[in-house]
Amino acid sequence: MIVNRWLALGFLAMLALPLGVSAMTFYTLATVDPSRIVAGTPLVVTPSPTQLPTETPDPAQIYLDGLVAYDAGDYLLAEARFRAALAQAPNQANWHNSLGLTLTQLGRQDEAIAEYQTAIAFDPALAEAHYNLAALYHALNEWAKAEAAYQTALEADPNLAQAYIGLGNLYQDQGKFVEALTPYEQAVMLAPASSTAQLNLGVAYANAGELAKAELALEKAVALAPDHAPAHYNLGVVYAYQAEAEKARQEFRLVLSLAPDSTWATQAGQQLQQLQP
Image 1 (cartoon, rainbow, N blue to C red):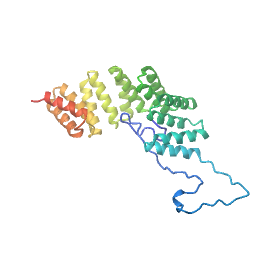
Image 2: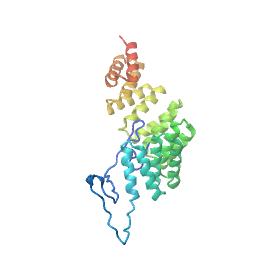
Image 3: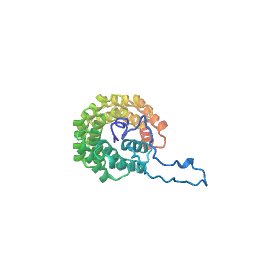
Image 4: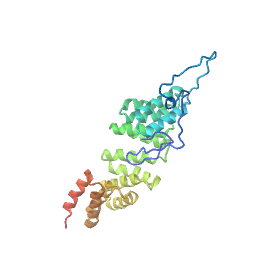
């Protein structure tokens, strides 16, 4: 998922969308700071014949505060901030997209879909909103809607590697392994340093029966992410299928050391038992 163009493309990992906000500042309301009030000190309001105007908080700053809350995992506060910002500037497509992602995190899928669609209505070229909508449809197993939204995201931004990965994942989830190869290959071309893209491409090659290509892609994946147990496990399986038993054993032992209490470790242990010399 992608919050907006500031947060977009930070997180690839499976679900990755990773996130950072730079140059953040917090706004303060024009009130008394409670930390500066000494206990027992009476607060006195001096009557004034003229009511001073109250400064309206900048909606852009409220939105930035929402991003800070989102980044901290406080999704309820993020929702409140995004809604407050949109109350003053309802036509900001990025802000609707961010609210949609927040609602997705809160498990309110129908509301999230509505916000993504609103973002797209305001800015049809906002690739991030199309991608987030696609990912949500994907999670809901609405395959046709997800595929259409991934394709639209790529029409809006042909360089959005995450959308190619998402489309490849969609095909893999449906058992369309050959179809998954093209979007994964495109993702690797756009983001060659992405271990996720290399891993998914390697798995797709393996499922399509192209073991030599699978081995090459998975070796790149573990080189990019040496501590990623799933990549080592899948590489071990490919080695085993090609009768490279010692290499396979080395990969499965790495899985046991990297993630000893995981399902990957359990499967790696079973593989090692079958590969005993």
